[in-house]
Image (cartoon, rainbow, N blue to C red; front, side, top):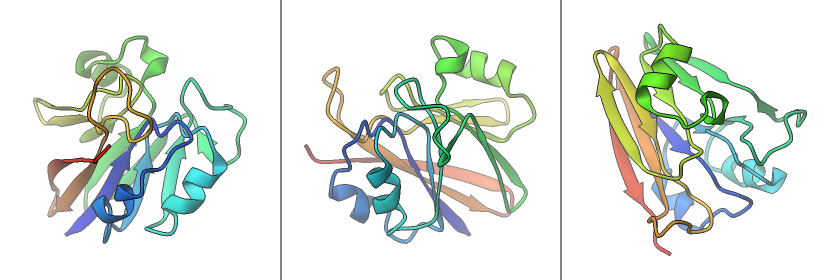
Length: 157
């Protein structure tokens, strides 16, 4: 079994509780709007990080990509910020990125876990400054024998 930390929309702020929430994960996937190189450095203290850029990040930042594709134990995971499809939702993301088992996105700041057919679509919520009266959060993705399970982890203010 491999656990992967999912985080998005830090907007230059990494809450101390993220260290505990993602402790023990094998890697961290950041779904954009990082807004500071120090965020990726601090996340790397927990586990190796792969990150994409969001609409608030510089697309030419060498530490960020437009998308990331990760294969773990037979599961294909795609990570993007979601802004590239307009208002991201499961249908739009599946249409844009077919043939993946898990789609991870951010942008909306709204925690969302949806299963559409065999595809798991996950927005871990926003881990940075509190906005829109939403509780900050991250997620943990468990991958074992080509199956996936997700848990959202709410962060204190």
